[in-house]
Amino acid sequence: MFRISLRGVRFAMCAINSFLKSLGVEIHASGHRRWPDAVKAQAVADTLEPGATVGAVAARYGIFPNQLSSWRRLAKQGKLVLPAVALDEPAFAPLLVHDVPEDPPEPPAAVSTAAIRIHFGAIRVEMAADTPAARIAEIVRALASSPC
Image (tube, rainbow, N blue to C red; front, side, top):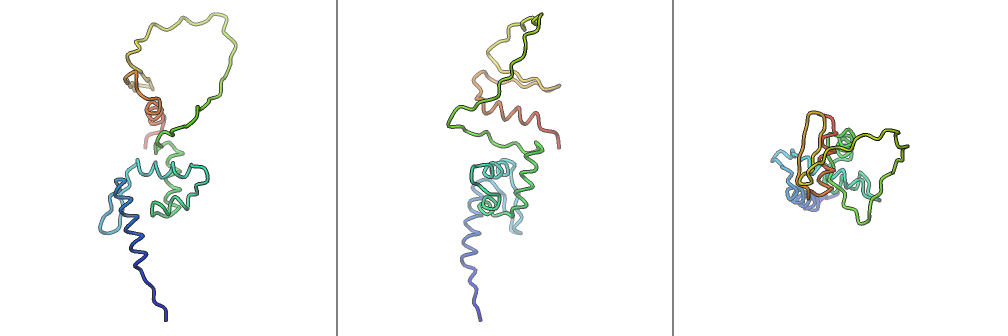
């Protein structure tokens, strides 16, 4: 006859639930959890770290790997905005060089440097000039994502 102790399982679940509650996840008595988009996005971002696996990150958050994979799919579809990545070194973007047209267009009218303006279709967003680049990138990603 074998005796199985669930004490360690209860302790592990309690630790995971405490961790999740600290992130803002609602945990109901039935065991159902309500995940804020920010927590889902952070879990997906954790899978993008070098050496991370979906299984290991899912275990850390106390979910099945297929649930985390569905959140990754939402992020790929633009329905889940990931947090901005803090880089320790400069990031580079490709530079495209084109021939200069014969008749260059007239320079745009002077724009006030007191604000940053983003025009996306009928949507207009205005921010203070000192808005961090990471926040601007988050807003642009959110605007570019398709509606639910």
